Image 1 (cartoon, rainbow, N blue to C red):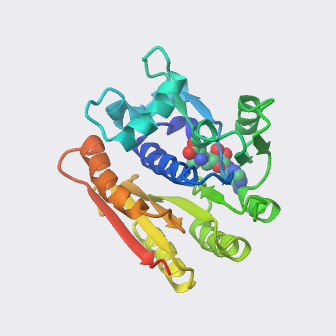
Image 2 (image 1 turned 30 degrees about the vertical axis):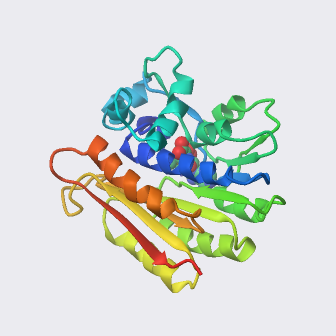
Amino acid sequence: MLSYRHAFHAGNFADVFKHVLLVQLVRALRGKDKPFCLLDTHAGAARYDLGSAPARKNREFADGIGRLWRQPGLSSELGDYLDRVRALNPDGELRWYPGSPRIARDLLRPNDRLILAELHPTEFPLLKAEFRNDRQVAAHHTDGYAALNAFLPPPERRGLVLLDPPYELKDEFERLAEAVRRIHRRWATGIAAVWYPILDRAPSLRLQRALQESGIPAILCAELGLYPYDGPPGLHGCGMIVVNPPWKLDETLDRLLPELLRCLRVGDAGQTRLEWLAPAP
Ligand SMILES: C[S@@+](CC[C@H](N)C(=O)[O-])C[C@H]1O[C@@H](n2cnc3c(N)ncnc32)[C@H](O)[C@@H]1O
């Protein structure tokens, strides 16, 4: 059953965190001339209308992109991310929010490629329409985990897999651990980035332990928490696990995570975490 609709959450603090990191990952891939390939396994709709009924329901974007939109004095990295959002809002009013496919597409060079997988019958046509006639983007109406078998390793041998599932399934964390192991078997040098929510603390810690026990080297974990992890039920924070992180990503995130917390924090609560789960060889 596919009931999750990202339109309710687009531009919230978790999207800001995820997309700031995504921009950094793609920027790092652009650091070398050789073309790269990006695979977004749970792509969503590519752009979201923040004036739509779903977005207005809980106005989650107000505590995410809404906080950064007119904030002065941001670092160049947050400015780089904001430029992706500004590109969809040329008149300066925040109305549209880019999903990961739009952000990734806007950072491709002429020989780079983007492969998208999306299973939802309502989201997929929107995704397809966004990239109609774009020869650098291939959108597939398929299961994101099956896409790993179909498209990895890419002929370019350089690139990134973004795994950003909706966590509707009870065993999503276990599926992700298996997916990361599979990515590593098929494409040991590829970057894999897994976004996860922190609702209950336990499942994401279990995922981290499973990856530590997998023997896969070079795993970095970054987290942003806005609410106490033992507080009332809700999205307390989120994180991203990055396998094969680009050189110096840890140093960049060491600056960016506290900056994000300063911009997005709610009251006094909040925390960040940056940790190597497995060292680079
Ligand atoms: C969190 S949203 C993706 C947001 C998007 N990555 C972004 O950052 O803008 C998760 C998406 O996965 C889709 N989805 C759910 N199950 C899927 C599956 N098995 N394969 C591919 N997509 C799936 C949902 O329809 C939803 O659009």
